Image 1 (tube, rainbow, N blue to C red):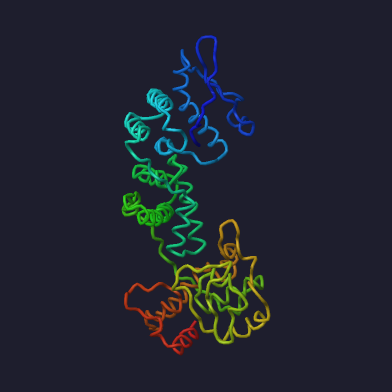
Image 2: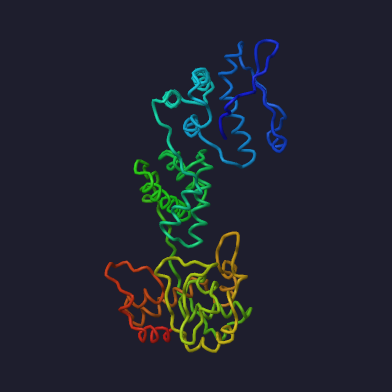
Length: 397
């Protein structure tokens, strides 16, 4: 939505002037009319002063109907120098009169009007704004996230901006963030709300680095959200030789069982990742990894060698159908089959591996390296775990 440089919506009426604008044909069924028309005032000058507010409101209606970007009054104030020739004294005078009308019509607050005028006359520089796409791109550059994280950022940011009625992240305020937290807690589980706010908090940390004067509006908002922790019930998992089901599903699940790897790591494997004595967990063009620590080599369990041998003759992705384009996630359709075949979710197989290793007294450095966790101690060195120890650990699974 933007102001018009040369408003052309003033029409002479029988008693004064009117503001008229045709509704674009593609949104007429949504808006419910073919023409906007409202009184402009007794004089042409008065109608001309009302024109910017009229254009802004109708632009907003069009944008909403089309599902496009909608800007807040603050963002529109920042757009003034780009939308109008502010070197033209007559234009500036008309726009200033328009600001008074906008306050009367409650399109601008009195405080916003003051800022509107300061920007109009050059006493205040308009703020620069970063688009949602630009923020996510900068976050990707800085953080090198997994595709799933990027998808989470995009959805959370889009929903938040839509709820707040602003078009740019830089225009959102602490009040918007607090209101959105309340909105989430009324509609979703606390765990889901906390995850969404964490996505937004990560993006605002990046925004804070780009604009040092930009406050972190999500800082501390998750602290008081009480997450409901579910107690894990120990489930007995039958030996994989007794499992029955789809052959591809069985193969993926058996690899998960004997490696403790993440579902996406295995579902997105390439034939070239299967070596004679190990599985390479590494990013590829289609599947990124959760963290840098996720990239690792897992010794091939003796019971997997015969199973994966035929796969080495293939090329490229082993199970491309396991990728879901809509969510940019791997293996999302395996959760239900996994429970039917093994009695637990894919995450349950990973949890089992961690339990077995710790139960056998393996040190945390080994568990962290084998499972691809990010170490939480500063001096950790993956190279400190000998390959022979990793081989022995995998044989316990």
